[in-house]
Length: 340
Ligand SMILES: Nc1nc2c(ncn2[C@@H]2O[C@H](COP(=O)(O)OP(=O)(O)OP(=O)(O)O)[C@@H](O)[C@H]2O)c(=O)[nH]1
Ligand SMILES: [Zn+2]
Image: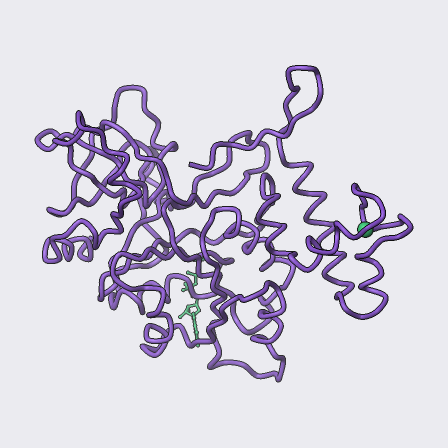
């Protein structure tokens, strides 16, 4: 990876996104270890970046690379590069995978999630809401990036529709192939800042990575040969942005499921979350109950009826995909995976 070499010039660990949040976790016994940020997660190995440059990390025996995410901070031995410990995460982007108990880790310690969609038939409010829920749940700030502005043939107000999806949501409309896109996105790409990209296939994520990193080295993610010699996209990676920011690309996701996203949905649907306490019944489903403040808001035109329909669908899906456990007294408790 040519872009990883740039860090040797930069020299300082803060440029990699190292902050007091991570420094405070290092104990006196660990003071001799070097902090490394995970740059690539492969099936059997991890590579990272330290302030001195790229590091190939040696995993502890029995460790599974699936437990690490691009963007993670770990401590390693200075000479051998043996990985000693992963530090707690400030944010974690993860998504439920159908049929699997544990969610898939997409990226860690990300400040901003660029949710990428194009100004054409791909633009789908219900799908974008899923990405917003994921970003909110992770603790990252979502920014909606509308690509292919140069090819728009209709007069649909894409930016206006995107802005209606969540309060205070930043919207940036770009031609991902133009250097202007890098300038427009620069506020989120400053030194030490980490951005991740999410969106369906073909919307322009790789194009944006190329435009932002000023490089042409990326086509279709990081490829690794599997045992049968086929090339598969197995890893996401951390790319340097001139100016000191970092960008993590994720493979296109066709169907993003929601699960364990309750807090993320509350933020996404803040206008509904705020009305709910005014309903007559505290467990109101805003469906048939008398005295429902949410349906009253729909009736008066203060709340978009489509939003309520989509809120219901996502909330129900979230509950059915959120593992439940039996509590000490046999009552069901919702189990939330450790977010750090
Ligand atoms: N005209 C125009 N073409 C674009 C724009 N963004 C992306 N493209 C083109 O759209 C195609 C798909 O872009 P990619 O960057 O590969 O899309 P992706 O989101 O990375 O797709 P996956 O790797 O499958 O997830 C490429 O041919 C790009 O050149 C844009 O803003 N304007
Ligand atoms: Zn109600």
